[in-house]
Length: 145
Image 1 (cartoon, rainbow, N blue to C red):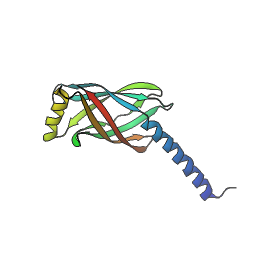
Image 2 (cartoon, helix red, strand yellow):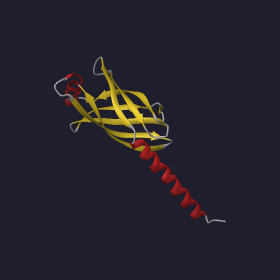
Image 3 (tube, helix red, strand yellow):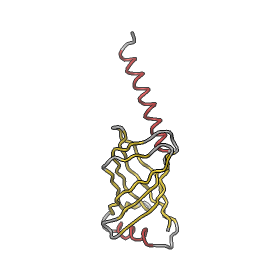
Image 4 (tube, rainbow, N blue to C red):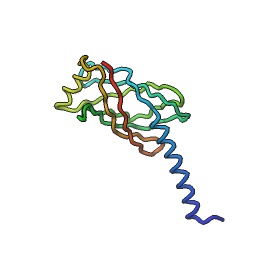
């Protein structure tokens, strides 16, 4: 019979390998903005296409992230209800954007309505919950004018 510390060590190793593989699979997901709709500053919706080339389906329990434009926080997105990113598929996911007050509102308006700047890189920094574990989000998405 194997000693308990050895069993726990083996279990921890396989748990870490599984978590590392999930992080690797999650990092392979590409986020492509599909649409931004805004009837006013309190009603901005961002739709992204999540392209998942991995063979793993992700049922995300919740997601929260801040949005940055040129190193300025311009808002946040929150998705408290679960959603699924299907394996080897493209999933459309909608997020309600909550703009930050003050200077960031002008930046949000510029992002939405300024056609001079053809491509706008938005940094998404946050975390999501998958199977009870929290994983970081560090992605850049490009909005086209």
